[in-house]
Length: 335
Ligand code: SAM
Ligand code: DTB
Ligand code: SF4
Image (cartoon, rainbow, N blue to C red):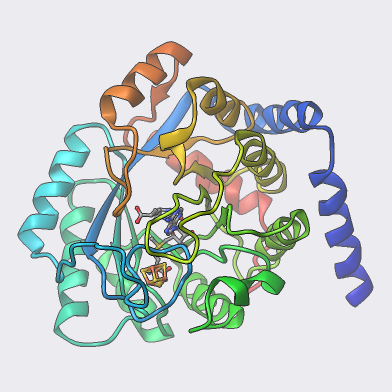
């Protein structure tokens, strides 16, 4: 078994080290076999509870361990979320992702309110995603019952590097939560972040770990660090576009049917670099001039980019059932 795993990792390492133009060509071919290359899903992010998080993720503006000058915000009202969701749906988003700066979900009034938020967002017809930290099997079941489509919980980096990034939880904690999400029948949204100081081997470890999740991810965000003043990573250099493109291409080749999301870091990517990300298999972006707390290009810039590249925002539910079928065929469920 160990030998089998070593062989899988070695194959991913060999893929990763391909010449970049070969990788882009291969990824573009896989992408066109599984998706309409002109369609890009537009998603909206909303921070429903901001700052004061007890975890110490070294990249994060919201950790209570660092002085980042962030304005904290308690859990939003259901009405505020409903209004934001209706606006997002009207502006063409087909997925709405709510993020809370919690270490873990706790049963009680606030979780009940999040369940109501999910019901309100689901009523707009958009896919509903949440990222709320760790959770248990029963909480996952209740999220599913409320209408949650997907749960975002990233592995962020390879297992060996993870302890350099966060000390308040383990890699296994992440995998356990992802297991609960998958077993509850919620799509797993799980990816990583480049620019934490990790090596190529750590990136290969991350790709390998994604292939070994208890349930294969339906959605994979690829983030590039947005350095935040006050965090231990404030002075990190921005990830080069080529590294991001390489990671996106490998992700697309390893997960042909998944949605690959070009996530944080777009604020510093040229149109040309973003075009190469789409060519290499990215097929989703977050819209708006802010992600959860950091700056982002904004809808006018995104519309101009879509016009330039002849891309279209994926219409509501277009391709969804097709994608689910392809996805079911392409994954081995390891639950
Ligand atoms: N509290 C949630 C959890 O425990 O999963 C996570 C919310 S966090 C904003 C979701 C993901 O965003 C992180 O896993 C990380 O990959 C990415 N992220 C957070 N801060 C970032 C930054 N400054 N730059 C780039 N990506 C970031
Ligand atoms: C993910 O992997 N990227 C999105 C989403 N999941 C929630 C969030 C990126 C957040 C970037 C930092 C911020 O704006 O605070
Ligand atoms: Fe908390 Fe999530 Fe930020 Fe980590 S990434 S400090 S868990 S909000």
